[in-house]
View 1 (cartoon, rainbow over the protein chains, first blue to last red):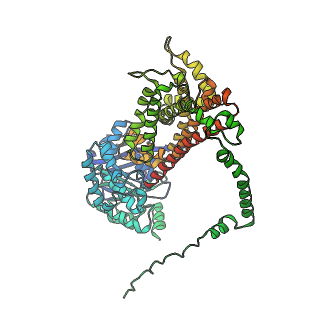
View 2 (tube, rainbow over the protein chains, first blue to last red):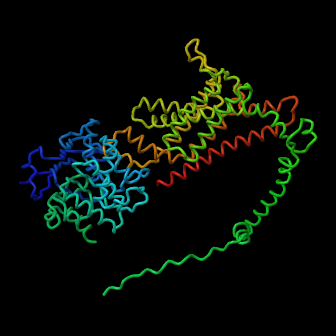
View 3 (cartoon, one colour):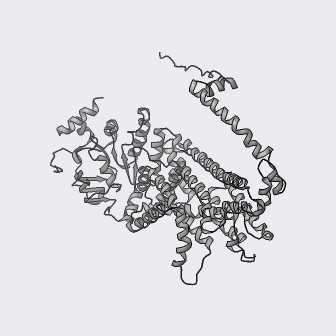
Length: 266
Length: 361
């Protein structure tokens, strides 16, 4: 069954219509965003179900970072509606704080707090946002540090860790809030090639554990092995979306083919 | 079969060349221009040092009367000794001198404990916030102690009271003004900007005049506050505006990713500002912040224009004493030395704060 999103045709194995609305964790409907006069997101329609792993790719300036930043309202959309975990994002700050506690985000430049140790970075949000007792927060943090394999770094400051370790610490920091959705904004783009693997391994393990995630990345190997759906964006629009196999083997739109040929050639 | 890579063992670097002649050759005389500079510097030192040493030490009179001093060639330190009570506490009653001494002991004790980091940051902040209470009680009196009116406070006592109270009040107020200037609420922003720009556009002397003359007009009838408190208000207002701008510079330098990460974790704006942005910003602006505190300490000398006799004012007044005429230089040199001691201590404290801050980055 075809859905005429943005007027482009594509084959898909996932039938969004057949799914009940209440199963959608994230739902973007006719979302538009402008930076001044610049139309950066054009009529975005996207529905993410629980446990779905989505990879968003596209050339720079296509709006993919803006898209996921709109999901937790680090950018605000001007028209259309975004609903996360049943909560519409319409400017209500109290509701937004609740949504943000359930949506974790990892940034390209990690954004760890440099004036706190790694352990303090991880316990900070549970203590101050979820009002968790200190001891409980510390044992929770240690568990997640273990899970991302940097348990021995807990007493160090972020500046003393390598890029890969910092990004894993940032992922652990988001996980300490027990989010239902994880957003990744080019998590490996600022890393040395040797460290990309260790971060992607953590993300793969997270995905295999059933985490709903939207990941903006250029790592096509990760997309092929982990994603349920690959979305290609250009010029603020979703140009094509499909399962990884269909997307990489049989791109439907010539713009997608051009992009894939550029990034898969080296 | 793969070749196993064994890295070469680390060698020790070559022993650096040492020795005074090597140092002199490389640091002082390594080329023609530097050699000329060195020779000029040596010439200046040779010309200036003996006369200065003579005046300060060898020809100076340490014990004696004014006549002994005038006969001598050097500094008259017995003048300073004779007037020391005036320099330190001004017209404060001599029989109650134990009170300013205790207050000074509290102040310097707390400063020493803070500077040597014997106290945790939280305890230090609480200590400093509570310090004004015993200080004002000891020096001013009341609640069981004999009252000493603020017009009898003078000399170094007055300078320290004005400076310490000024610093303790203007740093928090400056931070609040800086946050107000970056606030979203337009009303708060306009008030903060107005205060900052008005106060910064006017010399401190003018603010002191305005505080002493205009403040009573704003108070309800019958309520009177002593001139010391009006002057204190002026100093705090002046310093807060400058500190606000210093802190705002620090706030702006914090990467927006920090507050974005904190927002993404679900924290509200107050927590983000207080726990993430402000600690980092304050760490960055320690040098200019300490600079403003040092400037405040020295700016207290301007209160002489509204009739208060602080350390410098009293030094000048003391040198006009009929018995000890002609020893202005000694008075001002002593003043300068004590000011330098206080300012340098602050500066060293700032450096130690910066050094501690480096450990965590």
